[in-house]
Image 1 (cartoon, rainbow, N blue to C red):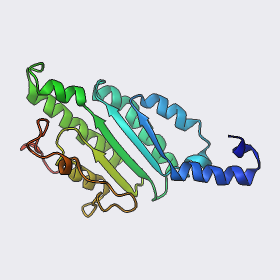
Image 2: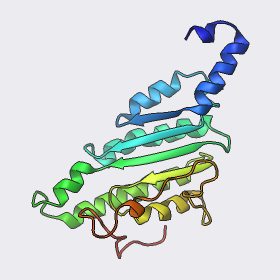
Image 3: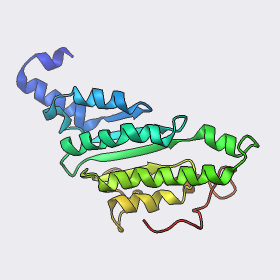
Length: 193
């Protein structure tokens, strides 16, 4: 940290490297993320290039949503450049495991709730004023839906495996096929967004 105190020019150069070359990962409590990002000087926030969010489904999506929307507004207000990369990972391991056992009586309602949550996440990104260079989405259910939702946000020609700058190593459906116990095909009731 002393590097930032040597001189203004060195502080500016070090800040550029810190914010433009690192991935900042945030998980679960987006109110803390908002507080942290709000305390970064605006000129430093503008240098930020890559953020990853991990959604925790032990909280309901409604609880996450109340923090997610203000976070998107904060990012849209500060990241007005076309070199911004957003990665979303949805963690529903507990829901998946429970769904494959007898613990959940109405699996269809859980599947519909997960699907509706995924769609709500990408709709909120699409309707925000956030300008993105790349967008990667990792879903624990409906793996075949990942590229569909990525294209919804980025445009019909977008392919995250090619990326504009950040290549996605593959979609979850490339790693796990229909034989996987947690595999869920895109539901028949899915409609174009």
